Image 1 (tube, rainbow, N blue to C red):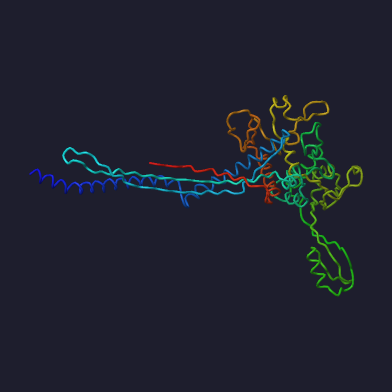
Image 2 (cartoon, rainbow, N blue to C red; image 1 turned 90 degrees about the vertical axis):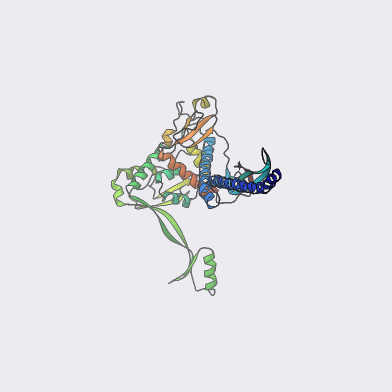
Length: 438
């Protein structure tokens, strides 16, 4: 009887072990599927694009704004600005899973040894972002920083949705030799700048623009460079060469003429403007003839030291700022702590009577950066950077400063990031992270 019993056990035990193994594997499979489903919710494939693209976009935007504000703060302290451009972002993602059953044997009281299987599962997720930075402190970058904005550039900005007063206050050194705080276009001056007449005239111009009484436009003008002369034997060759030189050969009744076309920026004045007191203020501040219907916009054509009591002008002659000068200028809109003033970390400007000059008179309605000593980032900050143990930030509710900051940032991208630096790339692999095991 006992032999028969053990013979039956020898036959049934493998089948029982096999059924047990199937059950264990089935349960393990369901567990792994649930685990994989939870982990895959993190996103791979197309889902990873949905989850990471906007995060990278927000990170690039935030750090670019913070770096830009930090450089403005550095200029206020007469420190050297420095920038890194993000030239490349590469994010390689990897997902690996493994499921196995490890056999082992248990001692049974009646049946001897009984085989079982121990399920084991693993899931590995790896993300390897690689960031490439380009230093922007080379010779070409510095040259662009110091190059004044062109007349066409200033005119283009003036025709955008930004107020003309904002553009002119930022990017003009003077208008018809009326100073726009020219000494503020560099390190903080010791003496108070000359700005009041310019600011009064520009505010009057803004009032006229808001009332749609002045309008910027382009007048295409022609200038005869040569001619008239008789029919040349090689008229076709001459015409081709003229096109290459951006000129035009035109046949007139007197003969052929070589003509150059230019786009002349102009300011048109509505006749109704002459009934507005803002027009009188504008003409008085910038020595403009009040009877003109158009004003030609030029750059550096008007000689300095012109007699303000001389003939009234029929043009607006601009001297423009470089981006670095504009950044120095707005840096005077930064509040600085008194302890830094006392310690001599920040240069100060004085009035003729020796009192401190209030730069808010120049920057009113244009640019203002607050400072506060705190361990945490100010809650009301739109952009904030920490420097010299203080937080410097733009208030989220300050629409004028936010608009000025956005204009400066966008112009800096046009002026400075339109070329590829030859400096070596600094590539930082962030390594592997996000490993999950169970």
